[in-house]
Length: 504
Ligand code: F6P
Image (cartoon, rainbow, N blue to C red; front, side, top):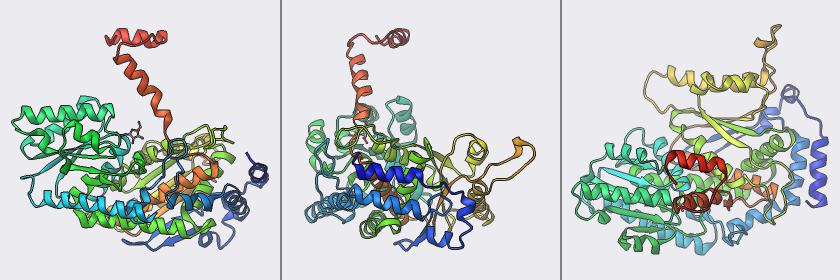
């Protein structure tokens, strides 16, 4: 850690820890810490007023951003420089939204045109009647499409999409049960086109087609990958391989051909709006600084809680059924990106890195886990996310109630309540942030996801770690391969489990 960075962290630690009550004594608190961003698809209000950050913290975090070269590193990402140093790669998911190095944006535009042609050809019947798509992928090749499709196709989809990720055959069988083989396409989504779960499920899906009378199963497959040669070698016709660049990380790949099922379900125009919403957030992130930069502001709060208040988790509750998959999407984004113990230069980190991201959907979670948020011994910063326009057409009482509950929880966490009986007392002074969308639609969902991508990147830059590798996932995969290959001796517990299950 440089002396400057160390000095800033010491200064941050020495700052007084104000209560939310004290901060709210300032009549400008809400105006200063909430921002309404006009975006394609509607405004989104980002309210960070119920966090403990004050101007003194912000000044130190601004100094930290300067000391670690935040602006230079942000510029380097958008310029397509090699910022994923451990894998020697550029990081260019924003180019897929039209913001980035010119050559990368041109390449992304060409790849999108190819994807659009295939989507429109399928809609026009070029592959016969297509009622279902079984999208096979895992991690970043599944969580994004699952979230976007679940959020945006409540009123119906042009093609029914089943997303299958787990190697547990129960997952694929459940998808088969919902599909008619004669009218089903298979999308094999894998950046590397080597992932065991995906390739095993893809083989089984082809067998299912074959066994159910489909003469040319490979003719029903679309490949979504950064390794197009491998897809062709596996048997997919080149015309149905939709490539994406190596410089797009798996958990950032929803904007690439990995978004094919989203475009097929929604139609191209909606997918283009999704990209445009994300691009608007890219512009905001690129063009604003300090507290005015919303992902950076959120990262200041994240670091404040993780490093200065000892919070080991951060929770996200979507008060919108359509966003029920957002917490699991964010888990991969944040934990796979920033769950690290070394900095980009290989030296040990200066303090805790990514907290555990968890969450759920409101109001359900209120009746399950909110007890701990209000009265438990762990301090958990919470994000609430909601939309003003309802997604349903039932009695407006549903949505009024939903939003009232969302805002009530933030208010209750902050205010607390005194009681003579300790069991009934709420300590209060518990932080939350609220993201309130005017509407939830392709553009605002795109912006929301891009906000979280940039928040994750900003956290990584401030901690001086590389957000874009994920070596921590490898060891378990290697051991599983070794087990299946009849490999070496393991610890006694593992050996006993393998023996009892009859695997070895
Ligand atoms: O094992 C982790 C991981 O590499 C993720 O980073 C990635 O999103 C997922 O596996 C799937 O990888 P692929 O798209 O190459 O199949």
